[in-house]
Image 1 (spheres, rainbow, N blue to C red):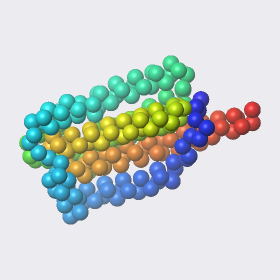
Image 2: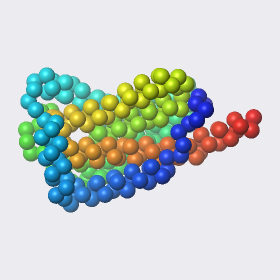
Image 3: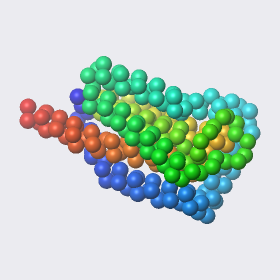
Image 4: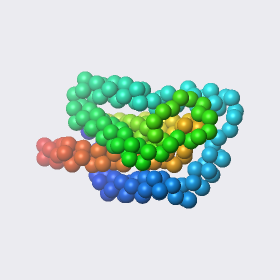
Length: 220
């Protein structure tokens, strides 16, 4: 079911461009390039402060990006889509999330970047690049953006929801830098990874489900 007359077009080309940017970014980080060092230093200087209210907010909000939280949110979304018989969208959601988080795990262990050595304001273990919180939230809310564009008819609601969905990964990424558990380049890498898999996942959905559905609709 496609509620919109004009679903987003095939995203294979932007997906390929993001893949390229993602690969270059990962290479710059793993080689500890001067650019990444100065990028991290600059952003940390802008983002970080010791404001108690900011620290309290960041500690609370960052939980929304925890792996366990993202998994629960994904499962709930998957079940809702199955209940409403949106099987193609349910599998698009599950496949995109599994691919993004699975690849992130592989990349973390390939790059083996240590976390920032400054005092962490929340507990964090494992390697630093890319940020799992940023990947998970960018992928999940990216999927929600696609579903909103496909299923919501009202332009006003579409716009409001897309803005809200964009704010979540941006804010979650910000909290990871603010709490000193990730470098800014980890967060950017996470966002790039999440967006890449959403674009590639949607391209598959478009070719195997949306395009045939639209052709059937035109013929009938």
